[in-house]
Length: 456
Image 1 (cartoon, rainbow, N blue to C red):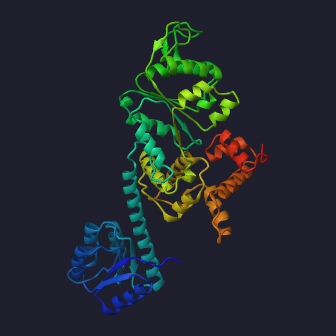
Image 2 (cartoon, rainbow, N blue to C red; image 1 turned 90 degrees about the vertical axis):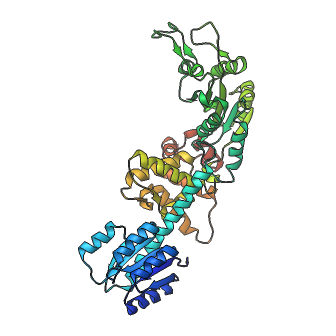
């Protein structure tokens, strides 16, 4: 069991009561400094820092309310607990309004004092941990859009810094939801092209005809309904960067047209005959194995080599040890602001669950989980109850059964996939949506774990 820790200032003018409190709290393992007057307490608060102040309310010269106000002024995140034999509703309300953590009336029960002190110190410790995380968050975001300090992310961050000033095309590889578009934005932001447009296009979201129209635009009269000419995204991105997400899903005929743009630095609008020059840096991304697709002749080899000048392999969130907490707090601040809520903390139990979970949907799934938690929570702290049931249940099922041996991430993920498929009655499309990944990514995981026959 974790040993109790914390430095507590006890302020009590009755000798017997003060010594009793000292005895109770020292037995719990706390460091105790005790004084017999509010005057001495104010002097100590100016000299030393405390984790919690336990003070009587009614005292001569300087009372507990003055101690509370001084503590709030000098040490705003030190918790204050009031103890008094003059318990009234008005004094309790006033103390809580001015920032007291709790209000205990004499005669108090020893267990009540222990419980209140323990919870007050836990709140203080949580604040310190949050402060450290937020400070780390500020320091680690040296590369815009990218949050992470894990060993797995260091080569990614270093590569982004090294290649941003070059004009080379970039291929970003990684699982769905791992943040490939954010890496592309970071490269663009740090490049000389940052003053021009960054345009993102998902190659798996359009038919071939619509894709040509979106990328290259059309001339007036090119087809029925084309009453005016339209500039495509490649033209809009002139001088800047175009990000082609899920490039592996691009049809072969479109791959030919894209190859021409990269090689010749010009393109034709749909229905056009005059080439239009363009200066664009291409960043492409995929979760697929393009080398395998080239061998299967579903992706052009020449286009692969044109795009794969520089490769960035983005690790899955499960491999980014230490980054979950940073990302969770980033999303917490973002979603709280968007929903006009004042939620600033994630309690220890909830954070432990977030750190244990294997995140098959990667950063996108974590963002969705935090958004859901912020939407559900009406208080100032995200708790375990705000997290999705499958995250809570998975922790209970897995870790209580493995009290003597910690399961690997692969074991955890395999168990999780089976559990979701059971909940979805084997429907893989529904299961993929629940996990925050696409069906292809789920299929790869099923193949990897030998679960291809699970579901439909």
